[in-house]
Image (cartoon, rainbow, N blue to C red; front, side):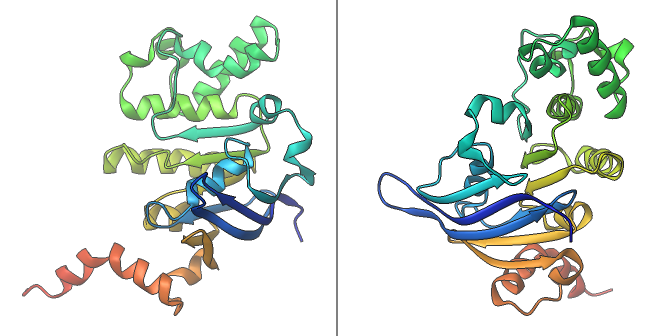
Length: 255
């Protein structure tokens, strides 16, 4: 059985108002796997993701990355060793693309030549022409191009774990599909452990081998992606039906 890349042990998180966002979560994410987390807004899926890089500190319980409790690491150093991709990419507007990608390496004190080489290598990996884009600023790129840069930056330090929080949610359907293809191709070659938060069931099915459904801070379902659509778990059936309402509507139209 593959080694565990991420473990959640009785992870609970409560707000200062005593609202429970995570309720004794127990999960093991195998090394090299891609796991998608689905759930309605406020279900706790992003909170769960952010416990891995200590952006959220659990009220109780423990998170381990590669067998080590994350509390044993300095939060800044921990985050530098975990890739993190968010919807709006979080690029530095006053940095050129090449420097945006190499920021983590720059903070780690890597030589300038190494940073430049790695940045250009990553641009090629995510489908950006380094000669064309390295010297541009984020505002000179399209949304899809900026997301490619954000993905490249998350991979710069070659982290074993990649956290992705609705990374393609702001993109139009065609650009989103292109980015999903880019990520899927990278996944095949890099063998990273990926935890992906998404509202898009099709995206989860396309990218992940395993799908978690979070509801009210608890794991309502933990299934292989091929089992999800036909699951009889009530919460899964309700989620699938809500997502595919258009299919049912189209099926009822006269031909």
